[in-house]
Image 1 (cartoon, rainbow over the protein chains, first blue to last red):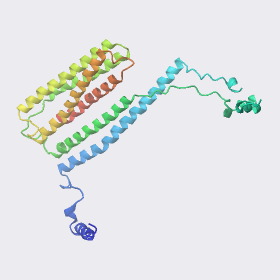
Image 2 (cartoon, rainbow over the protein chains, first blue to last red; image 1 turned 90 degrees about the vertical axis):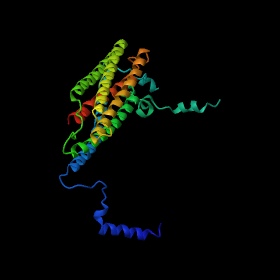
Image 3 (spheres, chains in turn cyan, purple; image 1 turned 180 degrees about the vertical axis):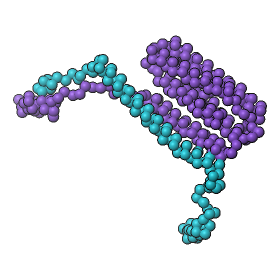
Length: 95
Length: 220
């Protein structure tokens, strides 16, 4: 494989330099400007690009909302019933 | 008699004032202990992740639909049966009502009313069954009129997207029936409600998904 590397490399370079249009990187490059299929793919790509942000943003927003609501409920519960302090007598610990 | 090392430590004990410094255990009292229970259960968090994955799954299907829908000059394609938008609108209302009954059932459980929860779960399951039954009847009619998975891209897209949603509703229905049985036999209570909570989350997800799919596949 290593011995054939120069041949393979020079073949690839020749393809790119002299036959670039025959070896497009994008396997779905087709059509011209204004083609309906292009519009369809563009819309689909934009939608799928935005969806992860929407999903993750919704999840994170839900988590933040739930966290804040839980803190608020906890504070309300503590206001109704104060948390019992640790049984640590300061004078006693100073012996 | 020689004293022990522990006893000798108190020979040069610090004074009381020194002992009251924070390093020696004195100083300000510690902050009050707060409960460390998590905000949501692990099952709840897991369900959130599952719903995110399901949302991405349906986003992929919707993306495929958009490619063909916007890539066609004429939609629906000619010589294809038209979808039953009217009866499906009623079906949509039925499914949305099932989400409302599920929510009412959750509230009943929060009040500790297990009989109320069972009643509202029964209503939710019944509405889900009605939804799937109407969907099935409509599909049989569409197949009779020539719209099948292999008849055209239109048919393939329709049955794939709507079919996967129906499959999710069916799975949610099975889960709902299990939750109903668990409630009936006392496994789900006001204190032990995580199973009910995550089932309700999944049900509301499949219900909330349907109007988007209806609008896209049936109306757009």
